[in-house]
Image (cartoon, rainbow, N blue to C red; front, side, top):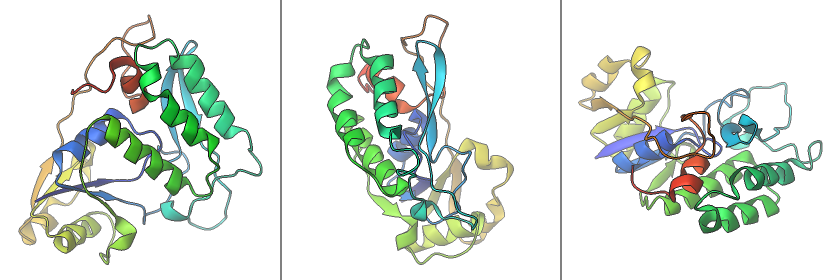
Length: 223
């Protein structure tokens, strides 16, 4: 069984879902430290003015924060949902597949979310459906696996009964392959080349955007 995992990013890029597609089971790493400048609370889309970040405001805390505990700053930034929805609408309303997915995103931003984790998982599950991905998701916080970095991944594989770990290509530089070998777990790396498709920009293809760009421009066709 192939296990893979990732932090629950906000409006993830297509490579996130490609890794999910290749796995038999996907672990949502919600029990690790939240990084404010990462992709857990923000992502990029294409607008008429070029690439723009959509960032969900997070309540400030002086203490280390786990992803699952991160709260959205609805009190200090009450209009963030309106701004995200308006930006998506203005950027993609003329895209070929806007009408296919717009209702889901509009309904999402009409709801008030307390925890970032709940918002991100709602979006991830909805997008999985649009991409016809039907894979079991397991929250890292629901497992008893302990350790940090590679040790945590190995222990998670052991707990879910996986004999293969699919890791992101970027982790080759820091993942400890020996720990997997000692436990009889095969380590493989994702090979993903973002597909090129017709975008709303006229300035040439821009990759590494949120998956919403791919959805609205292609309809979520197989890549």
